[in-house]
Image (cartoon, rainbow over all chains, first blue to last red; front, top):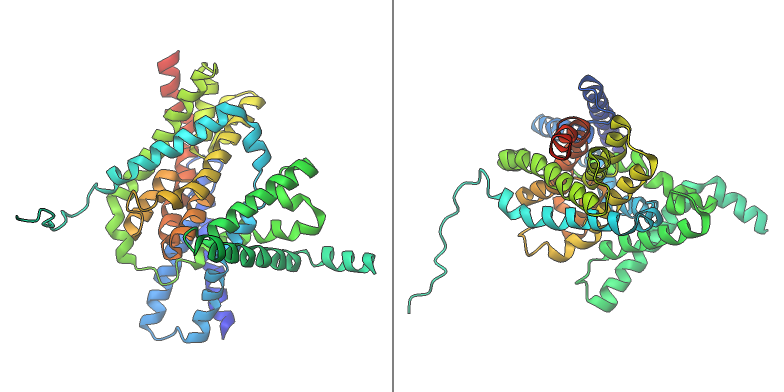
Length: 129
Length: 254
C-alpha cells in the first residue's frame, strides 16, 4: 500500500523534528538543531532495515518517491514566499555582507573538501614526449 | 460567476498552489529548453521566477511573505512552508547510501565550523566597514551573514536594536538567494558533482533553502547530502553566535 511509505516518511520527519527541538532546548538554543538531518538518517536506516527484511515492496516505495519527486516544486513555492523586497531594501551593507559571505565560503569548499580524504591515485597528466 | 470562481480558488488554496507552481515549473522548463538548450537548468529558472514573483508581490502587498500574502495564492505559502519542505527534503534521503555519508565524515564536520566562522567574520567586517562598529551590531550582522535565522536569534540574545536585526535578516536573505541562484553557475569550478562535495557545500553555505535549491538545479541526486549537513548549520550558528562568537568580537573591538 502506498500509504505505508508515506506514513513511514511522516513518522521519520516527526521523530526527527522532535529530536531536533529537544536538542535545541537541551543546549539552550532557540532553534531546531539538525531535526531534518536526524529524520533523514532515520529514513535511511529504516529503509535499509526493511529492504533487508524484504518488507519494502514497490507500492510502499512509491509512497516515498512521490514526495521526493515533488521536492523541486516545493522549493519553487518556497522561493516564491521569500521576503525578496526586504533583502534588497537592506541596502549595500546587507547585500555586501551576504554576497561576500557566499563568495568566500564557496571558494573555500575545495580546500575543506580535501580534509580527511584518502589520497587519490596519481593520474599521469604529463604526457611523455 | 466571478464570485463563485474566486470562492472556489481561495477555499482550495493549496490546490491553487499546486496548479500555479505546476505552470511555473512547466514554463521554466520550456524556457530552459527553448532558449538555453537545457544549459540553464529548468529548476534554476523556476526558482528565479519564484523569487521574482515574491518580489512583485512584496512590492504590491507590502507584506513579508512574497506571493503568500496574495489571498488567491496563499496556498503557495502552505506548499512551500516548513511542513511540506521538511517532508519533501527528508523524502530525498530515501535511497541514499549511508557509506557515502560516512566518507564525508571529518570534512563535513570541519565545513560546518568553518562555514559558520567564515560567514560570521565576513559579515562582522562588512558591518564595521559601514560604521556599525560596536560589538553588538557587528556580532548581529555577522550572525545574519551566517543565516537569516541565526541573525535575529543572536541579536535578540545580546540586545541589538531592531534596525540592526532587520539588517542581519536582509544579509541572510541575500546569502540564501545568491546561493540558490549563483551556485549552479560555478558548480563545475569547485567540482560540486559528488555526494562528498555536496555535503561540504551544505556545511559551508548552511542556508538550507539556498543549498537545496542550488543542488536541485545542479543534480537532484545531491540534494539529500547537502541538506544533511546544512540542517545542522543553523543550530550550530544559533549556538555559537550569541556565545563564543559574540564574546570574541567583544574582546577584539572592546
